[in-house]
Image 1 (cartoon, rainbow, N blue to C red):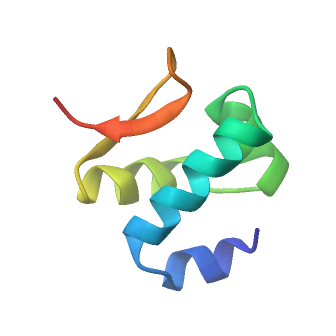
Image 2: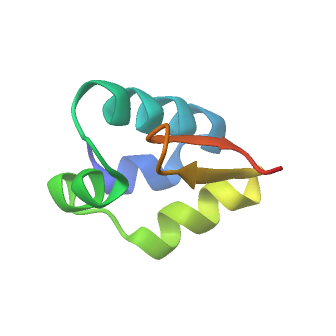
Image 3: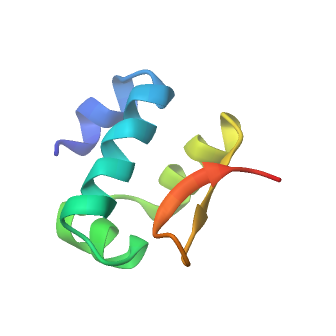
Amino acid sequence: MDKLLLEEMDRHIVLSILNEKLRLECDHLTTLISRYELDKHWLTQSMAHIGYRYDATSNQFKPCA
């Protein structure tokens, strides 16, 4: 997963990719960030921009309540 490519993609597509990686490959957001060398601040802000936040219990990004 190329972080520069992610930054150029539509954020809803990035959301889908992130949730798939969390479901299939990574047991927590920190694992995903470490494995793919992502910027945590950029990632969380990008998801917040479209109304999503990381939920550790379900290990996925979910709509903000």
